[in-house]
Length: 114
Image (cartoon, rainbow, N blue to C red):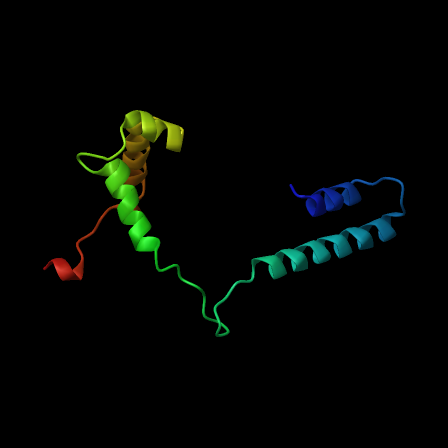
């Protein structure tokens, strides 16, 4: 929780003030906090309503797959564990559980494959 969130938290549980005044201050604090968050998270391109898309995203995905998930990965299992804080076997078990539990994550035939 950042400093603004802590300030709102303390305002909510301040017992030294009148209930109506206290309620009003909490609402003002929450409104102010959310408006600051909204301003901080706005990011767009040079044209309004267009969002920025990182052109290197696909390259980074290919590098990740090559480095850790190919038949002959560039990095070994020790490096995998160091980077992702779990064994590769555990990662695959979680992946398989997610795929088996939720059909949305199963790979489907693409229209281009026909």
